[in-house]
Amino acid sequence: MDIHSLFDVKGKVVLCTGGGKGVGEMIATGYVKNGAKVYISSRDSKACEATASRLTKEGPGECIAIPADLSKYEECVRLANELEKREKVLHVLVNNSGVSWGEPLHSYPDSAFTKLLTLNVQRVFTLTQKLVPLLEKAHSEEGFVGRIINIGSINGVAPPGLETYAYSASKAALHQMSRHLAKRLGPKITVNTLALGPFRSKMMAFVLENFESELAEGMPMKRIGAPEDVAAACLWLSSKGGEWVTGTIVPIDGGSLVATQSKL
Image (tube, rainbow, N blue to C red; front, top):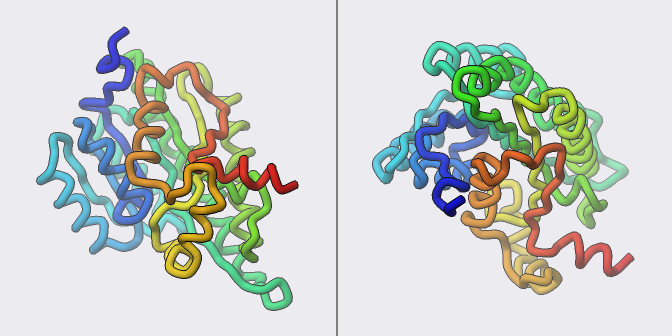
């Protein structure tokens, strides 16, 4: 029961969507640094290829880019088929790809709900559905419990101050879908969600550029999330140490939810 065996992911095959930059890149880096073989995918092919090349050079694991527009059903199917051609099993699926939209209530567009609910919820289901057989093979052929980690948000737990209606609704839906899948897929696969607080990403760029000090000051930990914070949570849930955890929503938020609840 040593720490190395409990949290070892060396040689594991991982798919991290949205892995070319932002939080996805942080997660992919954590796996590669610990010896995993990581596939990353997003519609930004240049970012995917650049990140994959850099992470493979840094090692000791490997990073491979398979660009895809994951808002489209057929692209999710293509990605799943491509993985099945390359790998006998998939050990870990990290559904990180997502998008946000902020606009005042009176002008909030109907199209925002279509866009966000499609990518943030529906296509997470699509990709998961198509990859469950490959995840189950890890269990049947190797005795490894497959892992699905969905990247949610504290905005899906407590209503945010910003007017991001479709985003908070989509993340709340993702959280519930994760619980439902966990009930269905055990004991061969675990399904958990990380409810993230503020991290440095394109999605958070405007907020952090304008309100980082105020945001950090309002949190118990007094800082924005670091790459190690989200990577460590993923490594835990992907390893032997996280095998008996499923159907959970884990806040990785520096205490943001505690601060919010204390004001209610």
